[in-house]
Image (tube, rainbow, N blue to C red; front, side, top):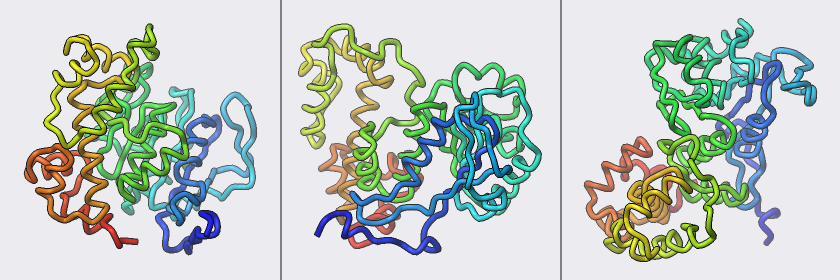
Length: 331
């Protein structure tokens, strides 16, 4: 049976509904990111993940710089049906958002919908008043303007995305994909998120705490690529690897390895190693392993207590809750 023929078309009423609210001059890139992550059918997984809708306050919506005009989508009332509402973003951060758009955001928040802001979408959320006292991020070049306009928001300008529970924000551009995959991981587990990332040909997991930009996006010399040492470590996650071990495998000093990780990945060797081990632990639990001391040992996290601490910090739930939600046999 082919993947396509085995694809299960779910009743939309059974699925979590993601609605993207598109306003005048919205950026097509973030709209495309939302469509790619939440809107496409997933024959590689064998089932639909979301019920996806676009909506706009006008029948014809001019996109950024007049690239194209969006037509044929639902009206603004569709935002009232969203389980997750992705709010508008646009490059003109000083222009106020439409009152009816802000009202739709407030109503969605009041009834418990999850809110996502990509790039300047954080300005929409803040203008709607739902970010007061909350953590958020936005593109680094707008950090000063954001703080000046919304001093009550706890802005974190140096990270890719911020997950503050029911409100999540991404720094913009490719970080919208990072946040989208993080949401898929939260909703459906690491294995499904990995399948979606493979379809996108995009990194499966860049932690939200990574910096928005790196000093050297490309290594100067081919032999400075981290790919060989990353592959070597990923095959040995259950071993007691240290940063010194990674440096020895790369034939550089720990200080040099640290600089290369920061320049090429925007993170530290230890943070990368911990993230890879946690991702492996999630896959083991999804495979049905319920002995958490075994999961911790096989993923290199050491103890069940350490596993529990990391999972609560990174996924918001305990290993037991993760097993109940994503373990083998769960549909």
